[in-house]
Image 1: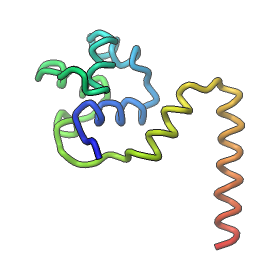
Image 2 (image 1 turned 60 degrees about the horizontal axis):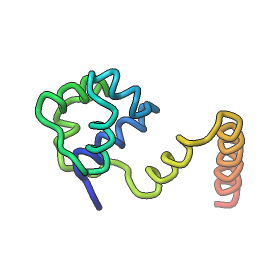
Image 3 (image 1 turned 90 degrees about the vertical axis):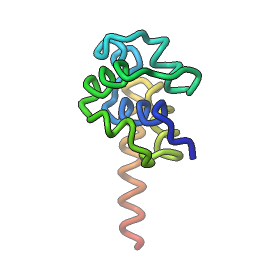
Amino acid sequence: MNNSIGTRIRYYRMKRRMTQEQLAEAADLSVSLISKVETNSNTIGKNGAIKVAKALNISVGDLLEDRAPAEGTINSILCRLEECERPVLYVVEDVVKAIITSINTHL
């Protein structure tokens, strides 16, 4: 599992339903830097990490702490959903609710 600072930035950004553009603007950094850090093609300095943490409303420790945020399946789903139009999201939400209800009924 890749648990780099870039992975954690992406996790917290998506958890807050922010785009890379929104995070870059809030942190006063370039979209290009955010993208490169999230894909581990670039690093972020101390000042950048502080700005990102503040923009995400988390502590710098949350970015630096080597603990695994929810990754894998959840991040994959979030990435796909981020690209969907609003009407599609409503359908997905209804389907997920129906699946969870069905599973709970049969347990």
